[in-house]
Image (cartoon, rainbow, N blue to C red; front, side):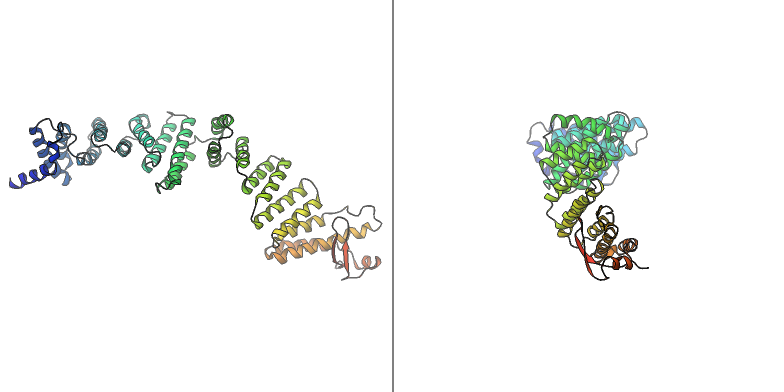
Length: 442
């Protein structure tokens, strides 16, 4: 008895404010009863005897719900145990509803609304994941997210997206709802990540994106239908353009006209070499070579890195030859690539191929038959230079050398035209390169 009264004295002393805040207890008798029951259920709670603790806990909760925050912390654990061990679905359902009321009372008496709403929503879905009965937990999570957009709970973000996808699969919401939810959650997590308010959110954002991609709601037709109209109404909204760009990229809707239009608008707003190259690739897929050249030239102009710029020049050289059939301009771009990157063996390979494919350079010349063979000397020179600056091209360059060396003039033809092996020779026409005379091996 002495120990019991001593414990009661300590508890009463620790909570002397309960007598001085009129209305916390209905009467002094209630206060004594609450303190007594609090002590008695606490003993059972600490011993993990939750079944016996529950009725005593409930008496304190019903009589003096603002007695102490521990009442709700303990209640969470007690309800979890009681629900897990419920004898029927009806009992489980009743206990779950009672637990939801407990969370509401905790907010009323102790505040911290956003965090408690996350607990409430998480508790609901732990014991009732049925999407057809999701509203209680779903609304709790949404309210919490709305209150904490600058620093949302990682649990709330991921669980809310997960439940949204479940509702979609159950036919309770449509594609647009899932897309809107995804967009909302990405916006608030990105904002928090940018402001360094919550480091956990970077991983959570990946989880949200994975759920969205796997939901089946993110099909291209739905995204284009929903966001195409919005962009049409607000073509200058850069934030909207960026959001939709990322969404279409994530959903692999990059071959759509909407994605092309958005990319162009973003590029116009903030020109960038990488974006220009992306646009060049998209227009190439559409066989619109005027725009391919336009954006390749923009990429070259915008690129500060010589090595990258050399690659862009070489790409432009390929396009100019393949599509425009302009060997001379193609060589000019390849030479500019080599100015930026002298070790770009591919540029030498390309120039060599341009020379080797020239068959009509000396039309009408009385020595055309001989001169047409001289282009293979400068072609092979280029292949040799390619493997010198880039040894990884050696095998390919050697095959080209072997292929085109057989077209060298023979010794008799060289002698007939007044030349000798090893002599310097300038190949004319647009090529205009000096080389060394070599005879075809017999």
